[in-house]
Amino acid sequence: MPDPAVPPTPPVPLAALLAREDLALRQIAGPADAGTVIHWAHTSEMADPYPYLLGGELLLSAGVHIPEAAGSGTYFDDYVSRIVAAGGAALGFGLAPVHDTVPRALVEACDTYELPLLEVPPQTTFSGVARAVWQLMAQARHAELRRVTEAQQSLAAAAARPDPVRAVLRQLAQRVAGWAVLYGLEGTEVASAGRAPDEAVGGLLAELAEVVRPSGPGTPTSATDTAAGTHLAAYALGAGPGFVLGVAAAHRDPGDHTIASVAAVLLSLLTGEQQSGSGAARSSALVRLLLGAARQEVAPLLGEGSRLVVHARPDAGPCDPVAASALGAALGSPLVDLAPDVVRVLVPADREPAPQPGWTLGVSAPAAAPDWPAADVQAARALSRARATRTPLVRHGARRPALTDLLSPDAAEAHARALLAPLTPPLTETLRTWLSLHGSWDRTAVALSVHRNTVRQRIARCGALLDTDLDDPDVRMELWFALRNAELPGTPR
Image (cartoon, rainbow, N blue to C red; front, side, top):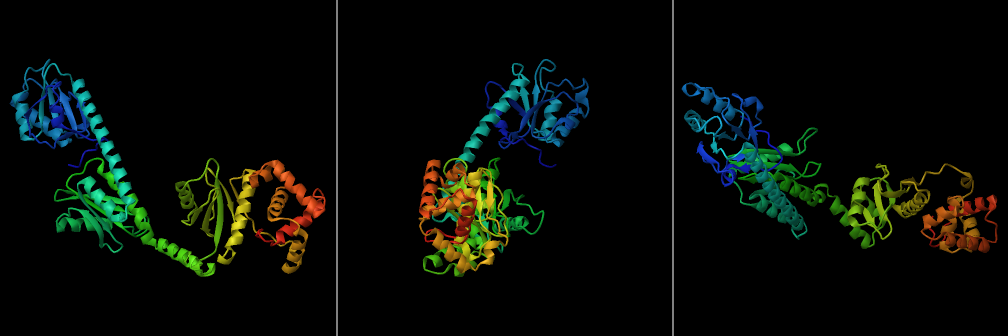
């Protein structure tokens, strides 16, 4: 029959229940197997308890259902066979008030069908037996949780060692008392740890690994099997057609799946770079930049197409590397830079950033590699505007043709440089932000992370240096035109 449905708690060994002196239970029939376990206790006086059993129970009965002439027929054989067919783990028969002794025919039937039969003395109540089962289960659950926690900690520590893949495999093999193997892209054995099973079992585990290797919609991410008394399990690592973790162990405790799943997650992170090659490409790009290569030469290593620059600030508290990495993953890019006051992410242009809970974002226009510095400035300004207007995400919009396009870029830039020449870069950026926010002192202060009085002082200084009235709309328009076209030192366009 199929394995019974079991609760998400460790089972209780029957031997542990028999060892409870307060219960005084005694096994009088059936095999004395140390591996017999109980998943729960259930009381029933039905002549046929089959419809009411889930499997794995210690069925408790006082024999109320037994007819007077039961010993001369097949009643007990039918009764015990139905319990076994339902997956019952053991039968507890209570003495008194109905029966002074356990019926001999019941003992023989339990021996015939190999069902453990326990004698429950008169002083022991069925509720007391059930309570003892749940107490033992709670103790086992606590021990299992502690074992899983310790295994998780040891696996995480192994992942930080110099040879992390093999260290994780060794730790996993030790924790499940078995064999752990990492299969590569072609199904070849990349690394392993622990005592390897015989060749036949190893071959079956390799076949099980191919079951979980992604091949299309509906492919399972994990699979289990049993061969020659060995429990086999396979876990796909990552979403692409890549590595697979295989585990073979003589025993499979309830926490083993959790432990193996943690190892699978760690190995997915450790092998993800090798699967896609993106890690090697990013390292190569960094080395080339440090050695003096131009951005346009390095950019192809990061992938084809233009990119967006995203500036982000957390809404509460400083940002840590874990949060920055999580933000990069949410935006779909591993290219993350964590600065003291902002997180910068380089995102492929075809992945439109969406607002992220707990973050304020500024997004640049799409840019090719030579224009990434300008896009960085766009993202910074978009973030400042987002923070000033308390908007989760602000994009640097593509500008439609305007009056400025009637002049040549050189003429517009020359006019802008001449007009803004008296201003220092900090004053220029303050004036730019103030005009973009329609002269709002408070929002400009928020965008620049300064006090509103500082904004007032800087704008007054701008007016004095430019010798103009900044309240005049025509003046503001001309200055905005100049700021859009200026390329002053320290003030990127």
